[in-house]
Figure 1 (cartoon, rainbow, N blue to C red):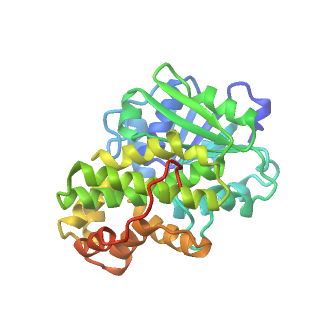
Figure 2 (figure 1 turned 90 degrees about the horizontal axis):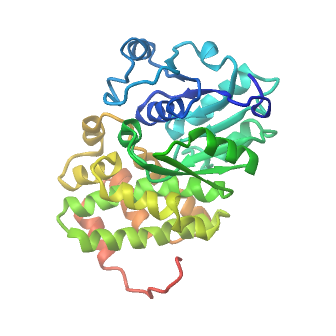
Length: 346
């Protein structure tokens, strides 16, 4: 694999051919890069290459000519200057480990970015911490996050995201590589804040879906989003994030989007739970990974570890993982003693 600094228009390998990985691959190709898309389902990838679309996850997003679906891992990575990982949080470490094993000579300098959201359940680590645990010497890395739905990115609708990078040069490279007139990429140096925002907002979106599913209306939804943002911010600051990040695209922006639109699978999970459907059945019905379900456990445990108060997250965790009835969880939240609502975010 080539080092990013040596490639003016690097080939990009996208690992993960779900809806978001496919949408990012389409966008990168649309922006002028040569892109290879890899996934575990070789039959599906062969179908994508012949039909020039991901019929299962993103049927309305046609593949640009410079995007190829490549089922062979080695061929997908050959000549890549940047690798973008778009897999669920539980799959992030295995992918990074495989990259290290297959490219031991220069994996430390490979441009690596990811759209993975969530904490690793077994360790409570954020993705960049997982990367550093596997490849301690790695320098060029970044996380992509913000208020985005894969379907709208695939259709070329106006979108803005945040790119938080380990160094400014790599961050600018990624922003320039992604940017088109309808796709805006903004740089950040707060990797922790952007990752925390991406992890916690999925949990809170399940809560927003539960509230709406119970028919509590817009007032309750906005209150949940506002108080949820404070919980998210408290955790992020305790983990070393910049408070300002949570007022931006990767904080408030992503939280509002995920809590208010039914394209969000996490919100749909909450609506289903409020109607009495089990977590298992709702997951089957949604037909894609609902990241907020495992994230609820990881975030709840991290909050306990750091002694951060997150009452909304706690109740969502108890519904998802302890079987607590949704109405009872909501009642416990409503019966909490009122505190001060200050101007500060926390």
